[in-house]
Image (cartoon, rainbow, N blue to C red):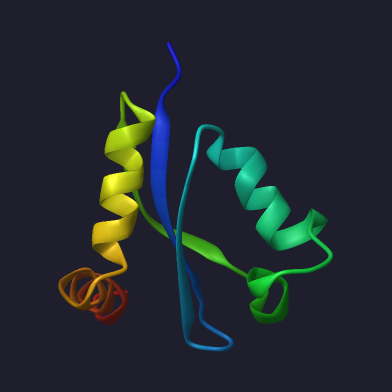
Length: 84
């Protein structure tokens, strides 16, 4: 059974965060920090993982990712960053 992960990345250098979901966090993290050659996350390297949540279904992971991108979700993320 696949497990899905919603994750939040933070770039201290640029004070930026990124929220996404995947079924393979380690490979996705490598992509964000090393492998990707274009896209939003390339501009703000290096990233560190500051938060993860695990889900049994892709649907639930997508719902949570979308929630974290709302105003309330962004406040949640801001509180995580402020506690670092």
